[in-house]
Length: 168
Image (tube, rainbow, N blue to C red; front, side, top):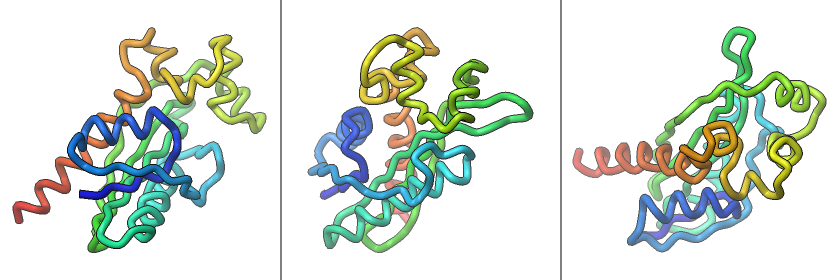
């Protein structure tokens, strides 16, 4: 089985390889078609679907997976959100979302000022490349849940839906 993932981010690649250990997984830079910092569930989901479609079309017979992180409001609180999409070689689209966690007010202020979450997290945590390592979820859960684990959960949901389709 060949899977193309629409990101070169190592946390996303590791998540797909962990959940599809026998697949041939290739990464490619795929445009999300949404702002670099998605600001709603809809934008974040749309970005994941766009990435997955590009990947599925790039190699005949391959499945495409898109994973997208974003933020969204619930009432007056900003939350971290994430979405995944799997596009089968036949063009069937499966989607899933995962963990959400409230973000501190100072993060929201920076995002509202046009700074991407990854850059803010580097500053906030006084680290480099947080988005390629533990992610915001890792920082705000004291590494009890990492970005790779969060995306692996979404990929599990996608794989489960895909396996269910195969049984029908």
